[in-house]
Structure formats: C-alpha cells, structure tokens
Amino acid sequence: MAKTKMYLMKDASEIVRYDTEGIPLFIKTENLSEYPDMRALCHWHDDIELIRILKGNMNYRVNDQKIHLLEGDCLIVNSRQMHYGYASGQNDCRFLCVLFHPQFFAGSPGLYERYVLPFIKNNGIEFLHLPGRDASACTPSVKPPSAVRARELLDRIAALKEELREGYELEASGLLHLLWNQLLSIIPIQTDMSEQTDPDLFIQRDMVSFIHQSYAEKITLDDIAAAGKVSRSKCCRIFREYLQQTPIDFLNHYRLEISRRLLEETSLSVTGAATACGFAHLSYYSRLFRESYGCTPREYRKKNF
Image (tube, rainbow, N blue to C red; front, side, top):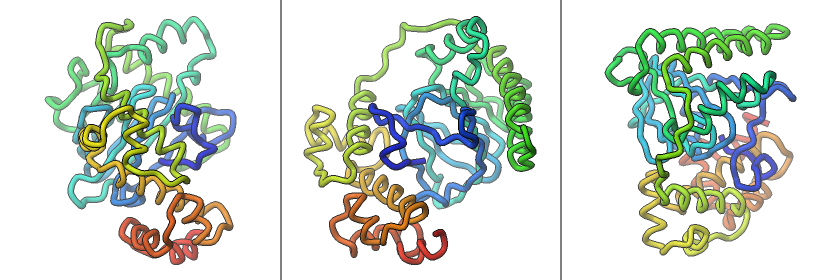
C-alpha cells in the first residue's frame, strides 16, 4: 500500500512498516475494496511478498506479467519486483498478505548466502504461483504437494497474527523457515543472470518513482514522460501496458491514497490534506475521493480519525 513520502527509499521503493519495530515481518488480512477502485498501488520493495487468496479472486501484475489468482491460490513475489493487485470485474477479494525482508534469514551468513541470495538474485524468478485447486495453473516445476504445504504454512502464520500471543513472531519465524525450505525444494538453487529485463520496465519504474517523489507538486503528462526520457505517447503506452491506467489516473490514485492516510493519521484539515497531496481544487479532490471510497473526505475523517 502507498505510504507517505517519509516511507519511501531514495529510489521510491516502499519501506514496509512492520508489525513490530525491529522485526522485519508484516502480516495482514484485508479486502481489495479497501483500496481506491479496488486497485492496490503499483510498488516495489526489498521484501518478499506472499499473497494467499482467502475469498473471491483478483488479478495480479508482476512487472509485465498478469496472473489471475483464484480462491485458495498463493503467490510469492520476489524481492524488488514491480507489482500490484486489482479487482477482477467488480468483485471484492479477501486476501492474506505476508511480507518479510530477506535479512530475516540472515542470522547465519553461510545459510543466507547459500539458500537466500540465489533466490532473490535469480533473474528468472519474478514470482511463484501456487494454485489452490487447478494444478495446471501452477508455476512450472511447482508440484501440487509443495503448493498444499505452502498454503498450510501461510494459514498457520495468519492464525498466529490473529491470536496475537506474546512472542508470536518467534513461531512465525519458524514457519517462514519451513516455508522457505519448501520453496527451495521446488526451484533450482542457482543465480540466473542470462535473462534480460524489458527496458520498458525500467522506464516505467523511473516514471512511477518520479510520481512517488513529486506527487505534492504540480505534475503534467510532459513531466512524467520526461522522467522516463520518452515521448508523451510512449509514456501513455507504457502505463497502459504495465498498469492499465493513464499516467494521470495513476498520479490521482497515488495522491488519493496518500490523502486518505493523512486523514487517518494526522490532524490536517480536508483542505490541508488535499493541498499536501497536490490537489489544487477541493471540489475536484472531493469528487475523486467519493468515486474511489464511496464517501466524502469529511465523512471519511469522521469515521476513521
């Protein structure tokens, strides 16, 4: 999910706000309807992300690849891949999201270098898809028994978070180690540097980074295109290809999500939140907010502050 500017690295990658300070682990169950237009914001981070579909289904993009996730499916997104989920039609989706930093496994440098680095540095592993029912949809080489075991481990991790017992992070750590061992039993342990990433992906990331870092300022389509060193038409084409949005739609969605967090977490007025996110006209901001969240900014503030 989008964070305020202080939660972004210099390259606009997301800094995940973990459940417990100092423990690089985040566990949350949420609904896609909590996002503007049932679409999470495009982002990337150093953390490995695990998605488990609990009810419904959703579309998911990892870089330039689209995956349709059904109820019961799991998805493992590798470190620093550009990704986001969005609704399939108008249907809501309830899902589990688990993030952990690769350094979570760095207690033993030898084990980290042997079993973790080869995974996160492998250009051929952007994600792993583990189906809930249809084994034919599985990422090649992922055997159904391995997928079943991975789902079971994720469910146990989710249950630990719900119980919130003292020290649940210790048990979650053990389960993540078991899950990681399960993944390594179905993929090769080697670094593949042969595959070349589509150069348009780097252009897209540069343009998204520019929006993440400059959303509070006045931004035009020309500015976004200039950030990627491309023409306006190529800028729009790349956004359509990777995000299924226009550049300005993505900018407005990002500004709305930042403003929503400001309304929840700060005492800024509605006008102040709108201005802080780059909206020059309150009426325009309020209309977009209502279209995305089903209520006005003031109504949202009353319910959530």
